[in-house]
Length: 397
Image (cartoon, rainbow, N blue to C red):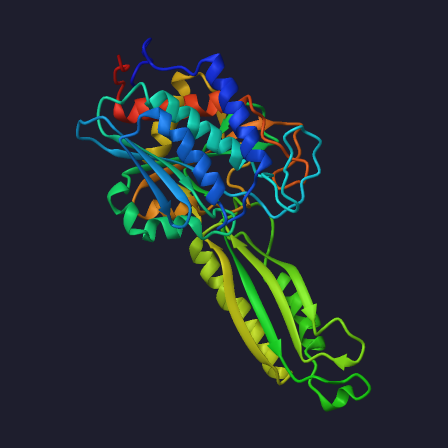
C-alpha cells in the first residue's frame, strides 16, 4: 500500500470557494443530453488553467477530455463525470436554482463536474510517478448514449484507459461515506417503444375500424407481470415498468387506430436482460397478432450493466482506507442504470457511491441540490486512487 505523502496537493479554501461558485453557475444553466455545448465551454475554460498536456473537445457530441501525463510509461487511468442535466422543472428555493424552464441539475452532475475540476486543479501542480490521467467530462449520460458515442469517437482512440473510475453522489447514505462492491453495481435497462397499428374509424361507427384499445389494455398488466421485482441484488431481478401510454388522438370524433406504449425493462445482469427482451417481444406479437394489429418495436435509452472489476475495487478500497473514509456496501447493487459500464469492455472499472447525506431529497426529485461540501471529499478520493495506482509524484516547482 502506498503511503500518503506530505507533499501531495490539497485544495485550498480559496479554491474550494471558487469550485463551489463554479458548480452553482453550472446549476443555474442546465443542459440536457445532447445539448451540453455551453456546459462544455465552461469546462474547457476551467481546465485551461490547470496545465493539461492536451484537451480534446467534441467527444461523442460535447464531451471534453483533459490529459495529464507523467512522462513515464505506466497505466492510463480515466476519471469520468457527466455533463448533462435532466428535463425536470426545478422547485428548490436555492439562490442558484435553474434559470432554464423545465430543466435542472437534479442528479448532481454539476457537483461531479466540480469534483473533477478540483482534481484538475491538483493535477495542474502534481503529476503521478508514472502513467497518465484522463479526466473525461462525458455527455449524454442520462439517455444512455454518451459513453457509447465517446468510445466510438476517433478522437478518443488514443485516450483509451487501462483503468476507469467514477463516483455518483447518493442521498440516503451518510455524508462522505462510500459504498463499493465487486460485480454488478448498477442495473441494465432499456426503454421499449411499442406501436400498435390498426385502422381508424368514425366514432359513431367503431366497428368499421380496428381499434388497438383492448390489446393495449391487455398488454400493460401482462408486460408488467414479466418482471419479478424484489431486490436488485437478486441475480434474477427483473422489472418491467409501463411509463407512457397513448391511445389515438385527443378527439371525440375518431375511434383510435393506433396506440403507443413505453415500457422500461430493467435487470441486474445483461444476460437476464436478453431473456426479458425476448419474452416481452414474444408477448407483444402474441397479443397484437390475436387482435389483427401490426406491431412495431424499438428501443431507446439502452444501458448495459455497470459491473465493478475486482482489481479496480481493490485499488479504490486501499485508497479509501488510507484516507480513513468509511466504506460499506450500502444499497449496492442499485436499481438505477449508469452508462459508465460501457467503459468496462476495455478497462478495469469501478464506480463508487459517495454519501450525500441521509436527509436530502432523492436523486431526480425536483428539489434536489448537490451538497457542495462533497467537492473536496470527492476530489481527494480520486487523487488517492491515482496515488495508489500510479504512485506519488512530485509537486511542480
